Image (cartoon, rainbow, N blue to C red; front, top):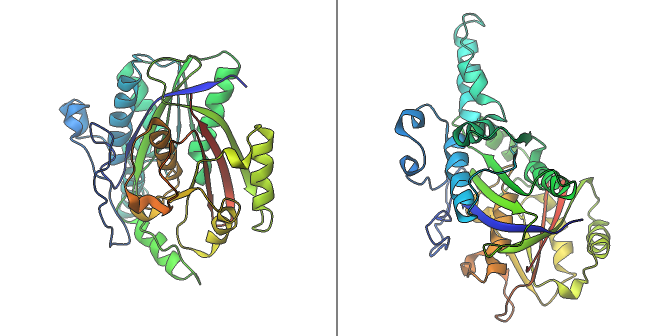
Length: 341
């Protein structure tokens, strides 16, 4: 595969990750079962006349994408690829409630049109007047990783040089409560808050001064047993010619449910390196793993992350190779490998 350089990564989350310097100075403790993102002043990125009609997902997506393109010094991407597990949930709730209230009659299509998963990518393209390749993946907790795979293929085929990629999901106001009620019926439910956020990055086939890291590999598996997860991870590293001793840090998607055994098995393979987690601080949602992508790029770029993110911290050192691993309810496993340029 051709080398995919990461020129910028920007994230809006329940922590202050969208700050100008991109550094989280202090972790905000989360006590509720659902947490909103720390929303930036969107009027700095979106005209007020458009802002009032946008859902939180669109606002987050447009703001994060603009900042990612600005940091990468790219005005027009050759492709826009996004991932979203639930799309614009607030508009979905509006549409369904109106459907019930009006006895399925006299419905306006606006809320439905704005609720679809590809609305964010569409609004970004409209704002940029970009008519290039535009695709959205709705593959549950591997939606963002699916967008990364597509971007790799676009670069490999020579179809695009600079690609805007993002993962975005919003909390909504009602559906999240039903998810929480169902989850509480589980024997060992998710023990981190349910959240929202948007992470966007620019991948390029060209190495420029702005390059912060390299996306070396992405792999998605539908099903893996907890007994085989270590073997699958080792096979992933071998396929990409990376030895386990080359890994400097592993970022895991622990959420406290019964399936955290997968992460515990991975931890046992690397007894002396750094392990980090993030869902405890930004919440669980289908594209939460995109925040791990932001964390990995931050580590490789030499930025310091708050100690609260670390499950285990080894001696201070530079990070050259970072492995990301995530799964949801024992399925939709993803491995992502980031390396120094």
